[in-house]
Length: 261
Length: 340
Image (tube, one colour):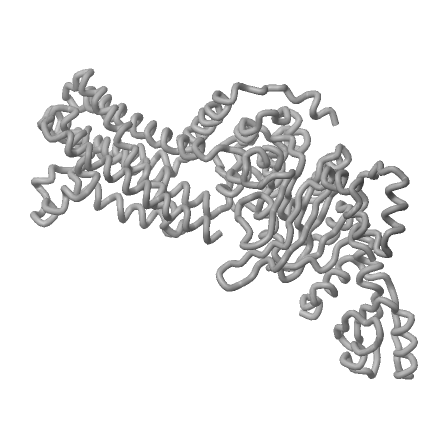
């Protein structure tokens, strides 16, 4: 075997090597999710389809702008819960995660690739919705507003990615899609992704501020000028706290599952 | 029969050390270990060890004091019935789980360290692999984990994936999928390859090709541990077979040692004697009913046959043969499946 003589001595700088793995891992995670029709169609397809129906029905009205921000939030939450929660739950159950863990792949590369991919899907959805709104929807979105919404999509994916990691260790993978829909659809509705919270039943209006997704929506609405920018610090603080809570819970569940293994 | 008869690289020990070792004690195996000369070379040639490993899942003990040593350049087969602890042993070696008691050491390190993982390749039973990635993308990703990977073309050739590099994993047949998983185990050009049931679902040609590759790796000084249900596979491939049952090693040796020296001979005959009486005969290892006959495993078949003929003049249909590996295996592990 002339194996060793052929092996390129690609002894790379120690710092760059793990980063390159993260990059490769992210590249293929994204490629794999984009190519998976079940995932792309539901995560990207639903917000776009909803916008074509409800956004365009309100052509030129504030609601057409409102729904860009609302459906972006919906896209962000579903990209994280399905793209991380469901995918990781399946990979755990099917043994793929074990094979990855037995390899020298650094853990942060695996986690990082999933987080970056979810953020990328959020970004894709925000971009498509802004394009749809400004062309067919008859509304104007300034470059600053577009950039701000894109930023919200990326930053907003962090708390829900953390929630995705927790869900992945809690749900039985076979019932995964059902359970995630049971979380994400009521969350979307009660947080004002689809219609202003003020139009919801009173008791739901009272519950909404307790939901992290409500605060994400408020930030998204403010980014396109539909809400006062005043109370943003509180909304960010809630999302930050929620992220910490999810990460701690995910870490505890992860350690417990390791201990049982 | 000594447990250390494993054929591995000849140890270039000075003749004096050898004579000393053998002269010191009637059991050469144990004295060899205490000899300083051999100890160093033994440490060098040992690739992975499990020492007195106990692993519990809740109340059930999956492994109860398992000892296992893998040596450089050997192909070892871990054989055992379902639930014997094969997969648990593999998962320990890969650092996917940790032992409740005992020690696991791979290439001189804890298997959970990345420096150990860089030198191990694993093929596990994976129910589903991301299906929308191409074969060459899967290989590219796994190669990126290693500082000095095997060239992609070499991986493709070794696993017999020529011509399907650009197919999506989801479009592959069962055998092709197994070959991709095998390829992933080779990506890092590892010193130790661990294969958990590697040829399940493979056609004969793919299987032979994997065997050839495993032999080639062993010939170049790398080690391979495989678990298998196919006794034929262990027989054809392994330089050493380790039979485990109920979480313990019950026998180890070359395939022929397992077949001949270890489980003795297989005697089949039709007799009036019942199996309890036969079991009481000297050197009898096990007795099973097979239709109207009894199948007896014994270390000294001549003694058993002499007694059988003496005690039953109606005895007929007598056969004595070396047990095939499958029979030896069933005899060792209780043989329940033979009667089923």
